[in-house]
Each structure stands twice: as structure tokens, then as C-alpha cells.
Image (cartoon, rainbow, N blue to C red):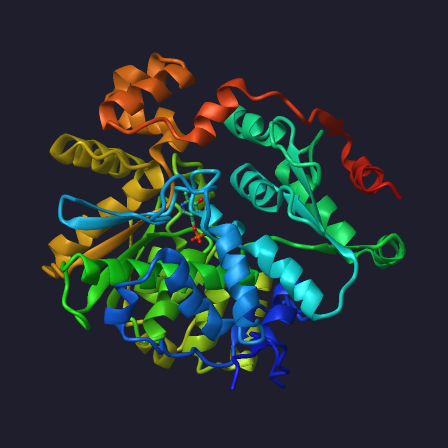
Length: 496
Ligand SMILES: *Cc1c(COP(=O)(O)O)cnc(C)c1O
């Protein structure tokens, strides 16, 4: 009865449990784990409307993580969504200029990655225990900035885990570096490498694939795992906040039970919007899934033409977490719209690997009718931030600015004015310079921390802890190594 997981590339559909899928992360055949079926919400929305975030999360997680006990799940949920968040609501809904902004940035690193990375460590150690794994789990991550910090914050001081994060010494912003090198927790290790992000990523992949190293680790009581965004332990917790947003709208009497809403998601790797798609398939009354891209508009082109083509210039924008040309999680949607057909999906992914593109069939395209894709240029994103601020005083970050612009474009094109939830994926304080520059170019001359205080004044919101902390926090990590010494550094940290 419990939902199991299969690889998107396995024609034999060999099933594993949720906890096994969380431990493995990626399938051996290179595919992603998907649920054998999408379970239906089994609590009426009126009931959900009376629940806290943690209670709603339980109602969602219990359906997808069927081999976890109630006690285990509640322990994971309560350990994740606690005072690390700066509001008891966890994910508040804020109305501004015709839409509800679902603020997913109240966790430790003030971006939506915290929603999943605060619970993943607990799901992972519970999974290890359930599968009789005695080793400590060692998380290895290469980061270009944001994911590394969110993973560090999530795993810090979680018993039974260690985390090592590699970042390019000269390839992250000053604030991002400060956030990482001030990380607390005796089980955390942050290492700069004399190389770029690709080299960090390649070095990490080599360690994951090194059988001799795995044996050496095992003998010392360790094993590697990954906090990558394709892990279902990151995807499933993201479904919960869409259910929560819907139930909040009912609780606040903004919609009637059963009334449909639209959801807008600023998209990069396609994880967040895929969670909304799963929420819809669970029976949550979502009409349109509006996929907002920045100038790297691969997904807009895909939804418009049915062809995915990554052969194009990579554009650096002010919404860097969406600067992506291969949206990994899209593979899960492709598998589902092909009718859970692993052979078809594998064929398309092979084409992506060899030619950089693929085209879906007419049948598959027809199954995308609940999606709408569009994009915002850098100018349009800035305009959206400025105009929302001028109309309402509410200040959004650049990623959310992309979503806000695309939503207004959608509304003008279609006249569809259903109640709409926009996923607000980062605090404006994380992208202070770009946000303040959009409101008034004169701000661009000022120093970062001066702008932080001005943003706080303008938006009438307190400076988040995550930012206050790094102003004064002591540097705890100053290791810098050559690319070829990454493995030696991991062993040194683990004492082997
Ligand atoms: C990661 C991220 C995104 C993109 O989310 P995906 O799940 O990769 O589509 C959008 N905004 C911010 C601020 C992010 O950190």
C-alpha cells in the first residue's frame, strides 16, 4: 500500500522504499527516483485549514514516505521546522497587488532551499537507521554559493552526520563566502579550492565513484551521501508548503474549499514547480502551474515548442539561482507525461546528453496543458520589483521579481484572475544590491551593509538574523587546498 520508488530510466521498474531512495539519492542507471503513484490527500482541506505548518507537513510526508513510522516522521518534522525559522508560521502568505506571496525564506539561510535542507538531514539519519546502516553519513557537496550554506546549516550538529563543502575560492560572492566560513558546528568543514566550480564538482563526483575510497571509509565507520536537489528527501518536503498555502487561503476565507488557484514559481532546476505539480496530482485544486524563467529561458521555449534545447549562450543574471540550462528535475515530468515510460524517457535523456536537445511527442505535449511558461528580462525583473514597491511598499528579491513579472504577463494575456500564489524564494536581503538598484540606481554606489540597513528602512522589515550574524561572526574555516588535494582533505577531516 505504501508508495515505493522507481528510477525514471528503469524499464523493469524495480521498486525500492522511500528510505532507500533517500539514502541513494540518484539511481545507479543515472535516473531519478519517482513515486510508483502519486498518493491522494486523505484529509479534507477544511481540516487542513485548522492545522499548523508542521501538522500539514505530516499529512503530506506520511503519504510519500510510507516506510517511516508516525513517530519518526513527526520527530524529523519537529526537528526541522523549529526556531531555526524566524516565524512560527514557517511559510507566511503575504498579499500584495493582486497576488499572495508565499514567503519560503524564513529559515537559516533566508532562501527556499532551507525548506527542504532543514529536514533532509533528519530524514537521512532516520533512513540510515531503518536500513541498519551503522556508519556515520558524510555529506559531500560542491557549491557555487547558496546550496552549500543551506546544506551546512541543515546538517550542522546533526548527530551521525558530517558535512564537507567545497567552493571555488575566488568564485563566490563576498557575502556567500562569509556565510560559509563562519558556519558553526563541529561536524562541518568548509574548504576553498584553487579552482573553479566545475573542478570542485568533478572532484566531488570522483570521490563518490571511487570504490577503494568507499571501502576505506567503510572500515573507518563512514559512508558518503549527497544533499543534491534531485534527492526525493528534498522534493517531498516542498510539496507540503503548497498544501499549507492552500489551507491558509481557506482559513483566512480568501477562497472557498475546493476553489481552484494558480501557482507561480520562479524556476531553475525545476524542483520547486515539480513539487507544485505533485501537489496538484494529489488533488490540491491548482489550475495553472506558471513556470517563470529569467533570460536563460530554456523552459519557456520548451513549454512553447515541445523542444528542449540547451545549446545556447549561458547568461549571468541578477537571479543567479535560476541561471541553469539543464533543469535536472524536468526528467521526472518527462517520465510522467510519457505515461511513466522509462524507455521513452531514457531515449530523450540520451538525446539530451549527445545532442543537447530532445523533442517530446504530441501526446506528451497535450499532457502539459496545465503548465504555462514565460520569462522576464533583467530590465523587466527590475521593473517588477520597483513597481510592486511603489504600489504597496512590499519588497521582493530578484528571483521572486521574475515570477511577479511573469504572473502579470500571464494575467494580461489570458484575463485569468483566479486567486494566485507566487512562490517567494529568497529574502530581498540576500540580493540587496540588485534589489536596491532596481528601486533606485542611485543606491548602486553604496556599500553592501549600508544597503542592508536602507533596505530594512524602506521595506519596514527587520534585518534577518542570517545577515546580522555574518556582520560580526568569527571565521571558523580557513582551509584552502589545491584541486588534487580534495580527497586528502576529506580524509584528514575524518581522521583516516
Ligand atoms: C534554487 C532557487 C530557485 C530555483 O528553484 P528550482 O527548484 O531549482 O527550480 C529559485 N530561487 C531561488 C532563490 C533559489 O535559491
